[in-house]
Image 1 (cartoon, rainbow, N blue to C red):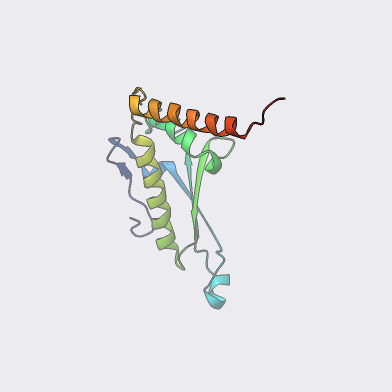
Image 2 (cartoon, one colour):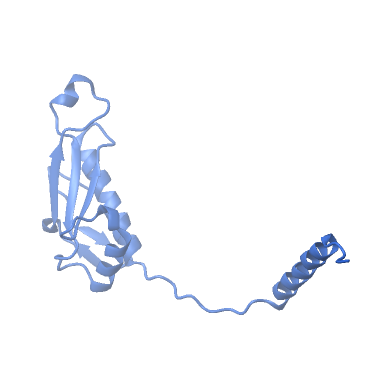
Amino acid sequence: MPSEGRVDPIRVSSGGFTIPAEELAWQFARSGGPGGQHVNRTSSKATLRFDVIGSRSLPDEVRGRLLAQCGGRLTRSGELVISSQRHRDQPRNVTDCVEKFTELLERAAARPKRRRKTRVPRAAVARRREEKKRLSSKKESRRGTAE
């Protein structure tokens, strides 16, 4: 995805919309984990910030579902924050962030299926009633005579 320090626009196929690269804000920081002495000198951790509420390229219905799905990743101002420090080099972490973001957008773009009401099958009702009768008779047999 990233080519020479920039990221291509993100196309969401299931929703039919594109997020331009200008709407993505990047921050880089020093990453924890392996890397030896080099880890103290390079900023390989990538953090992607996307303004969900202020985005003009995001359809309203997708925006609502994205806000509902990403509660823990949102700031108070409605900014989505995705970070990656899985890899030792910055471009691979940028690609990882873009993949995570694309996956979230694809999930939010998919319309949820409407639930159809179904009747409880007659056999299930009969099984439940038989079980109730069986338990009732078991408990009744435990009762002593009241003399």
